[in-house]
Length: 419
View 1 (tube, helix red, strand yellow):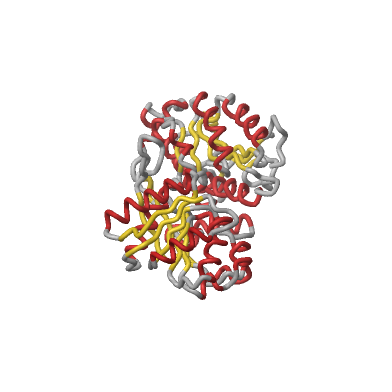
View 2 (cartoon, helix red, strand yellow):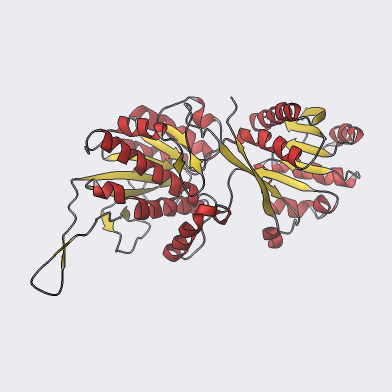
C-alpha cells in the first residue's frame, strides 16, 4: 500500500469506490431491507452498524515481494466481501485495513506497533516471510491480538505455543513424513538419505527416516554434509549403496548441483527433495540430465488455487476483481480472513451479540473445529499448528523455465505435526 513507516491506514473508502493501494478497505456488509410505499418503487433502509470491527492484512504490497503480498491482501479482501454477512446480521460492519511491510523488518515492526495499539482491531492476517512473521508474532502475543499466518512455514513461529498465533499452512518440517509416504506409494523399497547440517535439513531427514522405518522402506545410509565445492565423497558413498531413491534434505543451491554430478557419474535412480527446490533457474543451469537420467520430485506446502476443488468460485471472482489469477497464498489468506470472521461471530454470539474482546476472539480461533475453507478443512492444535496439514509432491519433467508449467503436482498427503 505504499504506506509510511509509522502509518498505513488512511481514511476508509466504501467497496463501491475504486480500491487503490493506499485506501483502507471498508467492505460493505449491509443487508438492505425495503419498505412498501404508495409508489411503485421501494426505498432502501440504510445499514447503520452498531459497531465497526476491524481486521488487518499485513504483507509486502510494494518492493520485490509485493506481487505475493498483494495476493495475500486480495485474498483477504474477497473473504470480507463474501463472508461477512453473518456479522452484518448481528449489526457489525467489517473493515479490512491493509498494511505494507515492504518485506522490511523495521517497517513491519513499526506497522505492528501501530496495529496492536488500535483497540478496534480484533484479528490480523500476515505476514509473507517467516523471518518477519516470527519477529512480529512477539508483539501480537504481548498485545493479545490474534494473528493468522497464511504463508509462514518455519516451525519457529508456533514453537512458543502462543495462543494468539496460528498458521493456515503446514510446517516445513512435515515434508519428511510426506516424502516417505510418497516413496512408499511409488513403490520404492530402499533409499539413501543426504541432509545438510541445518534445522531445515536435519529435521526433515530424521522425520523421513523414522517414517521410512515405520512403513517398511529400507534406509541404506544417511549422510550429514555441508559440502559446497566437492561432492565426491558423498557421491561415492551414495553410488556404492545403489539406492532406488535419493532423499536430499537441503537447499536448492546444494541439492541441484549434487543431482547434476550424480547424473554425470551414472546414477539413474530417482531424486526427492524439499520445497526449496522450486527454483526453475537453478534447474535450467543444471541441465536436462536431471530429468532424462531418472525421475525428479520435490515436496511443496501449497498448491495453485485451481488444485483445490472448492476454490473455483474464488478463482473466478479473483480474476474479475483483480484482472489476474491468484498466486500461491491468496486462497490461504481468504481462509485466514474467513476464520477471523467466524471466530468473531462465534465470540459475539457467546456473549449475546455483544462485541467480543481480543481475548475472546483468540480463544474462539483456537477452538474452531473442522472449519471448512476453500483450501481444506481446518482445526488447530494447542501450539497453533494445523492438526492435519496437506503436503504436495511436485514432479519435474522439464528443466526449461519456459516450460515449467509442464511440471505438476502428482500427489498429496495429510500429515500431523511432529515435535
